[in-house]
Length: 132
Image (cartoon, rainbow, N blue to C red):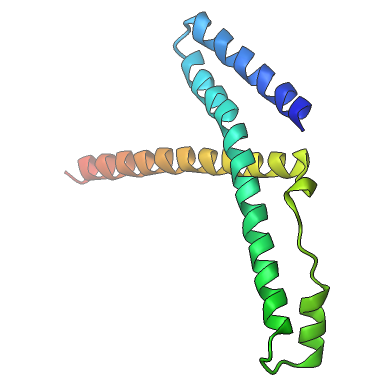
């Protein structure tokens, strides 16, 4: 997992350093996006570990509920006891990559929403000018 993180993080850091040293104004936006992509990888590791811990705790709670004296239908009790708790050792690099992709897509959607709000403001201003 560490080797995969290094191979993913190293090109992003190199590209961001190249963009910083290039000094071209349009490149600054690419530099910001590559820096965000490099920063999202450690955050994705923490989020994936947090999700794994939360799911483990939920499954343990469901196991306790199935073993308790609360009356439950037999198929539900059997299904709850069949759930296996997942440990942190089974957290793979693919899981981290999927979380990183979700985080980067949410970052991109936030930027897109910001630009759409600006476009709507410009359209309202131009419509008011046409009406006047």
